[in-house]
Amino acid sequence: MSKMTVAEAAAHFNVSKEAIHNRIRRGSIDCIIENGVKYVVTGEEASSKTKEESRYYDYIEAENARLKKRIDTLEHETTTLRNQREQMLIEERQKIEMIYKERDEQLKSVLQVVATKFLANMNVETVIEDAVTAEVLEAEPMDWISLKDFLKLKNYKTKKKEKIKKRFKQAAKDDSRIIIKKKKLYLDPQKYDYSDLLK
Figure 1 (tube, helix red, strand yellow):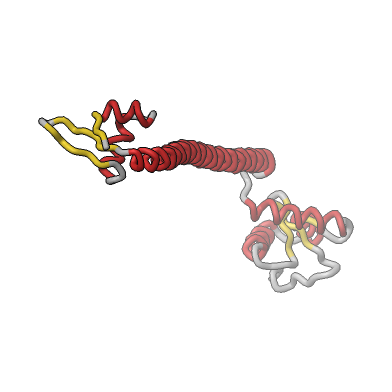
Figure 2 (cartoon, one colour):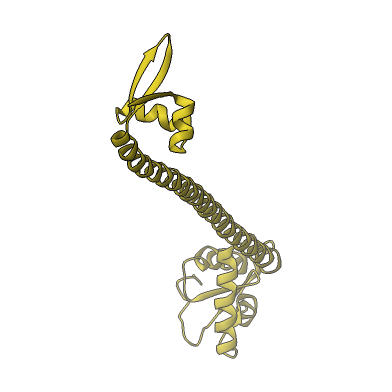
């Protein structure tokens, strides 16, 4: 049985001083303190046993260091992948928002063109009414005549003509027998009877 300092024990067992201190804490190596100096107590049996333990603990420490390094690498890779995924999601959302914004702008442009070119100074009802009137007048051009021409044929006096015109204008909004085209009234006397408005 012999004793040696921690530094001597580290050199003897070919390990670090820290490894010797760890073994002292675990109780795998005996130690004594004399005059404030820590000594490691060894013997032949203890020496061979300590060498085996030393190899085992060194292996465990090396494995722990390797695993810690691997964990650090995996954590770094996970963080990188998470950041990349978040960046991709942000970019995709921005692309989608841009597509919808561009489509909205295109739709607004189309609506403005339609409004300025086709609906200038006219409301939608007037446009629809004109389209229906044009279709009817084109379909039956011979049957429809203007109110003005119709009243000329009747040879009414001027005062009576004015009263009849007022009646027709008031009825034109709701009466399907009368068509308004460019602020003129058109009638179909062969198909409809207008006697109620001619009184």
